[in-house]
Image (tube, one colour):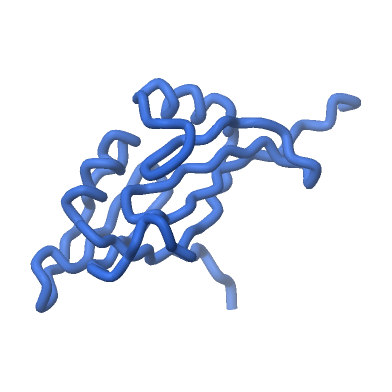
Length: 129
């Protein structure tokens, strides 16, 4: 069996606030599935990337343990795009600084309004190539 993709499912204390945040990052709402809570589940897409958000009113931006890693071709370029939006560098929501990590990735962090941590990275090219 071949696996094609894993899709993170992230809690959102306020779906509308989260949608506005991700729209600023150029995601689009692909689908919405209401459940007993209004607007209970949202599928967001940007290119091949897909994120799912579900309503979780108990989600606290100061105490979240949810998140995912997003691997991209050029993290510094995406960082320039997303940091130009004007989010803070720390806190909630935020787009942190980009830089090389000892494990061989250029990375930065994004924290959404519900406190979900998205680590965004691309491999550092071997300069000897």
